[in-house]
Amino acid sequence: MFAGKPAWVVVLGASAGGVESMREVVESLPKGFPAAVFAVLHIPPYQESRLPQILARCGQLPTSHPEDGAKIHGGNIYVAPPDHHLLIDGDSVSVKRGPKENRFRPSIDALFRSAAYTFGSRAIGVVLSGALDDGTSGLWTIKRLGGVAIVQQPRDARFESMPLSALENVKVDHTLRADRIGPLITGIVQQTPEIMKSSDGALLKRVKVELKVAAEANAFQKGIMDFGELTPFTCPECHGVLVRLMEDKMTRYRCHTGHGYSDSALLEAVMESTGELLWQVMRAFEEAAMVVDHMSKHAAENGDIKQAEMLKSKAKELEQRSKPLHEAVLHHESLSGDNLANSE
Image (cartoon, rainbow, N blue to C red; front, side, top):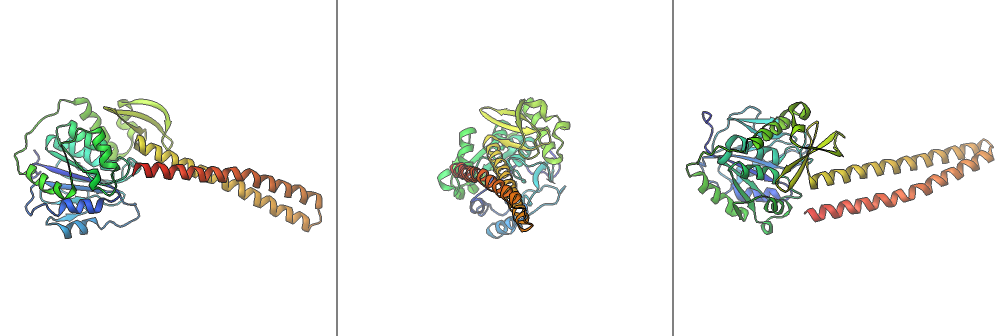
């Protein structure tokens, strides 16, 4: 054990509707709580995070956005800064701008994996309210390496997708309301932890590489492509080749530059990328129609009636060809909206 490192670590992950859930967990943690607490909440990279102030007001533990390299101390809550992964690196905090995972930075999965790798059986993972499935893979890793897996009751969460995904894919130890999670983990961390060394050397090796990817990128050089099967798919973010990674019945993907996706996150990213392409093609057709129409009017003003009529006909043809694209864009947005609604 590293000098000063607490015996236990608690990692909290939430997305949509997760602020209230985190407040309910933190407000019941007592002063002198011995474990270190790490929290990731998905927020836009350009938005200021006031989560440390919110959690500090409702609870009794010092809360902050930590600096990269800060030493970990029990009884403190460390919150991921916007657009940065929050990782546990030995007895220190690691704050990095590595590749996005599940289209987010900070990533819940990345934090959870770092807790599992560093603390093993002394890691407690908590998945709270949120859309889609970030946190499921990380919680699976915590459980697989001997830690404790806790999930907010789906009916208690404002958005139940993340809790439902975790319950479907992980052998969870406890499922309960957010306001009961704090007392539960308080009881757990007061126990003397059983130090268990994982025998899953292959998983530890892969997690080590994935943590390096989250911290530094360069997945290809780190060797992530050696842990899965190459696919015919490309990364929606950078168009790099994707490798398929299996975790029991779960499928994940990593590209050679480091971006990571679950099945549902990859679908969302592909749908968004396709939508952007459709808008670009539609804009190009409409822009061409406007240019040709302008040329037609200019030809008419110069007395070249034949040229003007020809160009006007061409402009109308381009307008007609753009109409199906309008319908395709609207239909695509409808499909994307239905997919997001189903995930929530």
